[in-house]
Image 1: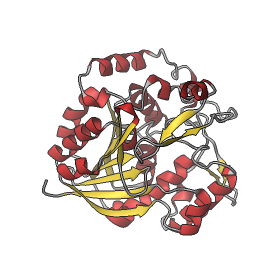
Image 2 (image 1 turned 60 degrees about the vertical axis):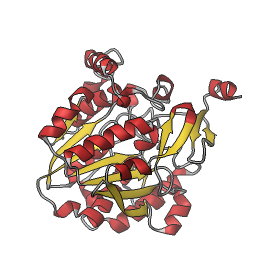
Image 3 (image 1 turned 90 degrees about the vertical axis):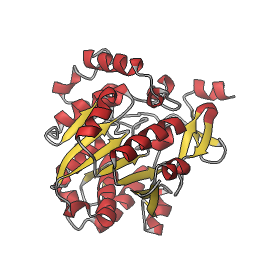
Image 4 (image 1 turned 180 degrees about the vertical axis):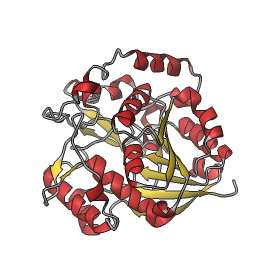
Length: 335
């Protein structure tokens, strides 16, 4: 049965409960064909680009649990990831599948919620042009919004409430599993006190896309994209004040999570911000489709949970959008 469903484009999305999951059907139009890549980027977004080939070979040579992928296999990469349209609905960001039916209505509700948080007017200071195949919706007030934009602003305000983000000056952030650099670009454009943002990822395509996207958005003065084989040296030279892991731990094995957390703890990263796919818990994706509790890993390295709240604190908005993801903030104490 599994083979038949996969042949028709369905993919198994694993839930937290002992390997149970659901099959997610194919989406017609995984990217918006009306929003192609800018002409100056077209030729660079090619699977045989020399830089991407170099990164693949460098990562292949590494002997590390970070490169033993249990989710980001070749099959997962084929989940709609067209380099030319890397901001479409794909394995990086579930823009359409996340919202399910009637996405336009749900994005308006999400935008209304974010607008209620927006004391600094970030919606007026940022924009969404839909480049690279991103699905864009009207927020009900004539403003184009996307999941990229709304998630980023919502995350920035959580960090402001709990960590004083907008009051800090000269701080460094390390993003574990940075994807194409979504949050890096938004934080660089919205947070004046940011000194350095480090994009770290064990997937060569992610490093490649981040390098291109950060430059394209003009954020390279404060955002540093770090190849995996340079991470240890980079962390030693740029001690982060905060690490973030946005939906990334749920796509890693327990061994990979342990390797990342060990690096953070040994470097003395004081705070860790995690977004979980399973309410207020974190589950690793281990071999054999096993979902194992990853909280003991963080605890063993000294990270204690200090804040846990739904990403949408308003219950009515949660009901409309249908999200149970949580923001989790950890602080490093005694292991």
